[in-house]
Image 1 (cartoon, rainbow, N blue to C red):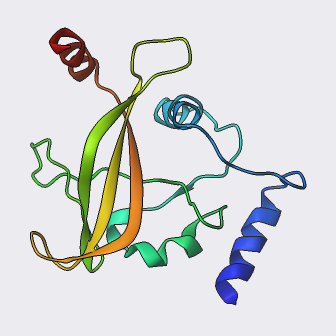
Image 2 (image 1 turned 180 degrees about the horizontal axis):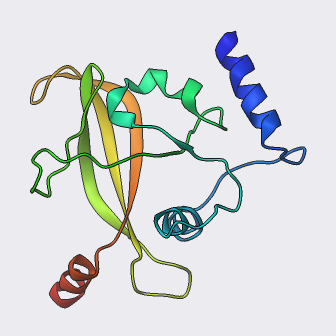
Length: 156
């Protein structure tokens, strides 16, 4: 009960119009929210909370969201396994997030150049490489680096 009340209170504080729905496309998430956040610009609507997702189990996250009932959106820092490495550390709470499927480039409408990358992750309860697969799925969006986009274009 308290969780639902806290969420309703957070939604009321946003002063959203009646019937408001937040169902952005991949392109809208990257261009209008992620790019603006990284550039230090104000977001169109303060609807995405900043939470370090990797310090929590996924079932604890809904109460931390500013908005949403079946889907929640967060900005989170990307932790690294090693200080100078590129591999992400996806250990979280009592388990880990495991990447699944291929990365999907995200390009604005009418453009062939990807500005972001979408990756699907599944939560496994327990330590890697063992662990029990759960029904929790997360879609990670990150900005595309110019070098990785150029390499992908040349290879295609």
